[in-house]
Image 1: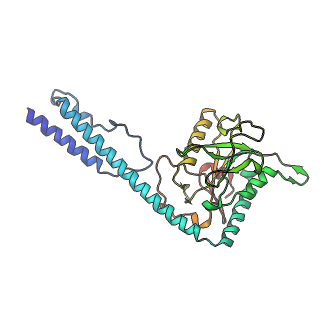
Image 2 (image 1 turned 180 degrees about the vertical axis):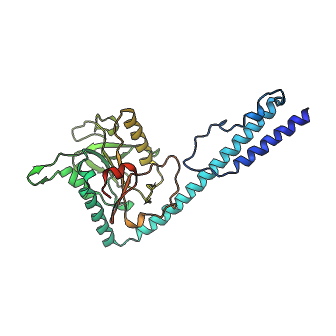
Image 3 (image 1 turned 30 degrees about the vertical axis):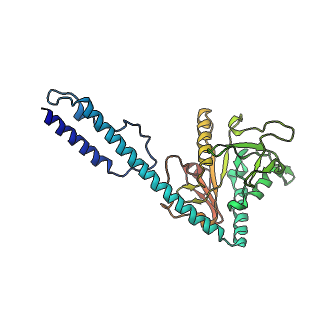
Length: 305
């Protein structure tokens, strides 16, 4: 009888090993230590005696350990591929002709400024471009928002703008309200960001504590594709912030913000080049020098195609 039980458990472990050799698809499932179980063979029945607790426990631990190892291998492969893509795109951006860069900067910003979804938005979060990072320039875009020019003799409704402030190296970033370009100061990396208090010493409004929802996010990135995949610089700041804000919007019953990324032509990759995990947030639309690329259903509702 004991030999029969041991043989039975060996068959279970063997079967589990076959299951665990199958590739996992991402986004990754959230696996608990005991998330995979093959229950029927272990159930006590008149025909099937219950294996000893020590054998059952060892087989469960073996399966869980193998699954976790498999998931880690998949993640390691994804992070390695991301590193390769980042390196390639950085080299491309570094070699970009200055006159072409300037032309594409203007073209992208003009497309945003002329878009109905931008004109109609009342509150937005937008990044502040940095030359060292070789991001699509946003200086014209931010100036248009903050200067609030008169058009056709009528003052447009002023948009409320929130811009990023990095708080630490643990993907913690806030979006704070500014009302003028002079509200920005250079941080230790020579990147402009808002001080936590204004000139009067008052705390700036944090978008996470605002009473009204944000309509639009203008996002940077290193690489993108036409399915909405966005590859950042590896810090996880924007993905973390967006997920937190999306959760806040859901809790408050607000409409989810429209996520738009700005891209140079050379930053758009072929589909399948950019790997993703469940922590990566896809964008709704992509603005490149050649036009606005709608991706999600939210984008198709806002953009004429």
